[in-house]
Amino acid sequence: MRLSPTALQSALVLGRPRGWRPRPRPDAPHLDRPDWVEGSFRFDSEEGAVSELLALGGEVEVLLPLELRDRMAGIGRAIARLHGPVDP
Image (cartoon, rainbow, N blue to C red; front, side, top):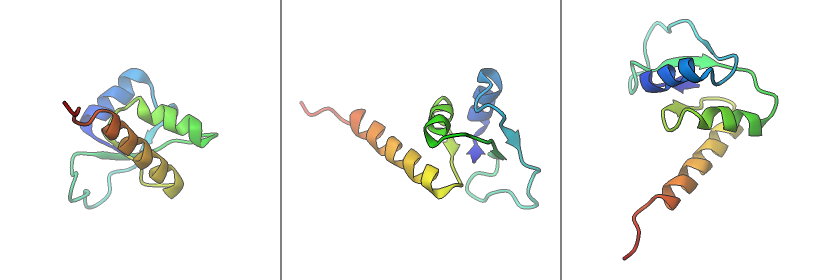
């Protein structure tokens, strides 16, 4: 996963996701998000991982596994629909 500087601060304060470890800095930072930090954590279930990641809000990008990435994208779309413009 990739964390924004804001999510990294939240992760350090909240202690979530549990067991998160940053990866050594890649030679070339990600072009779209050069200040984001890559890392990983182990999880027992997809449901548990979702709960850990939602604590960080919209400042986390799941890279792998693809199933978890797809699940988080679906949750993000559902949240956006719920909080979208209200019809008068």
